[in-house]
Length: 357
Image (cartoon, rainbow, N blue to C red):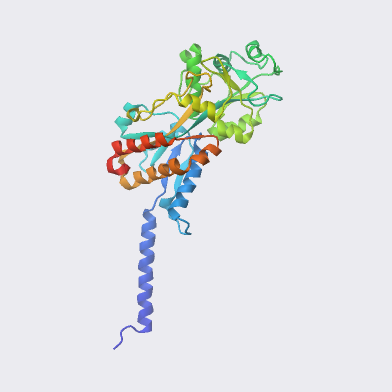
């Protein structure tokens, strides 16, 4: 007797399809994206790299999976690092490097992923990009509330050929925990003893005056909408919005316009050391052609996330180092050099063992 009657066959097929569906659903229930958060400075390029990562994993096919995706939230450097306490977070991106002692204590690895610069924007009528000159001490006095008008003699002395308005300076700043704020206040602390003594450097500071906004994008929008304002912003975003930036006086006394070349001039003085988590001081270095506020964005990865999760994060940044440099440059960033990328991969092997391979 033939037991594989049509009715029986259709029943078995239905069971097989149901089992297949259950298996597929179970697999997808455990599939999770790479989860990261932090720096708003680096958010535009991280989002592009995330798209590239998914495209690479799909390899031209139509099917995708959640674990081939990256869920990155630009919540600010401080908030990103705080999220590392949440077990679902795979990495943080921060523009403020964690000290080696903290990395060791918390079981973290840290490495650069992209670089760039923080620029000062002055939204003044009839003042083009790079024409306004500011020194570090005058900039500190503006944010301390000691220089309050664009017609102040200290600003005029730096800009004898510019016609500046007799208008109040609208001081703007980040109100969330920001690596951009850390870079800006680190620079001010080096050039102004008063700033160093009263406020110092940090991702959050108690601003003496001014209006705050969350995120690089939020502060950029507020600056664009506020005449006679001053703010500090990520270079690429300033270019994309067409905001007028200032030339800053560097340690050598030269007034230097921000550009990838002038950021690189300062970053080339850094001696990268994996023993410190590649922590670098990027503000106010010596050099005639140096713009004094470069910045480095770091990825911080917990060692206890398991081999599969850590390797996916490392694969994301391997792709960024090998193929994402042109995209970074197009957005106004400075990509990690091949030599530094090799140093970072050696650091992964030394600190993560076979997981980093």
